[in-house]
Image 1 (cartoon, helix red, strand yellow):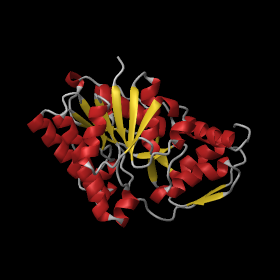
Image 2 (cartoon, one colour):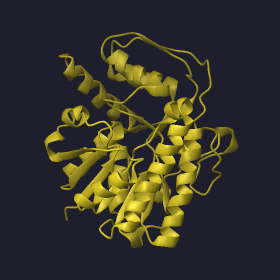
Image 3 (cartoon, helix red, strand yellow):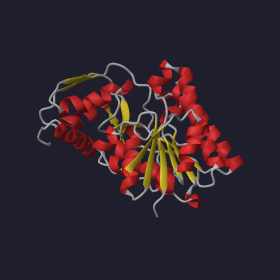
Image 4 (tube, helix red, strand yellow):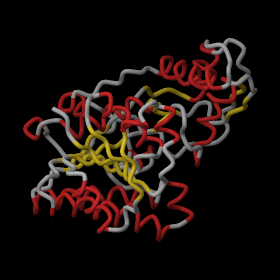
Length: 317
């Protein structure tokens, strides 16, 4: 049955993929975002099917009005300042990430029409990787070392309080590293360039060759949020779920890029150390939400490359 889903941050990178996923499954989608340019929605072919409302998630009246006036039944809350933005402007990070999430939860508390809030926590809520041995489950140590991660950890606490004290139904996902067309570069520009530069015939040199990264294709993340929004209450065993893609070293990822693009020129060194190399256990998401990654790294890279090449008038690979 069709539902009306309000997606905060709905014109952003993941938000646009979530909007497209929801449209493809027959839902009415409202994108609530400060940025109202629907260029990503246009590239994904769903701009005509998504209502875009300009608004600030830090404005509680605007959030409640958007949900009420559209008769929203489900919210996918993605609006946030990411790691780089949070580091540059910590007060704004608290206002957007913590205050904005509170505004969404308040809308769900006060509006009887809102049945579920699926929202983005992050693998950044975990401690640095040296604290773990093997797969990391949702019950393992949560001790973020960034302000961004700290805002996500706090939001897990406030979401639990809204569930236990007010009957709001929140489901949080802890995604890993998103990749796919139309991503902002931010602090992970090298992950974008590792695929995009060879795709367009440019040489590229990358560090961190022996470091692990979990590569989660944007469409898989979108699938996960749709399932988090619509999995029946009785099938949920918890309120926070790990979701992931394929974990591999940067060197092996570079090899995948070279296998997809035969003339790729990629140089890899083992210099540097990444702060986020946990390997997440996704058993609960598979069992409760029915989440299964549809894209291994080769499939994701190939689709990503071909989208870029088509837009540049190049032959597919």
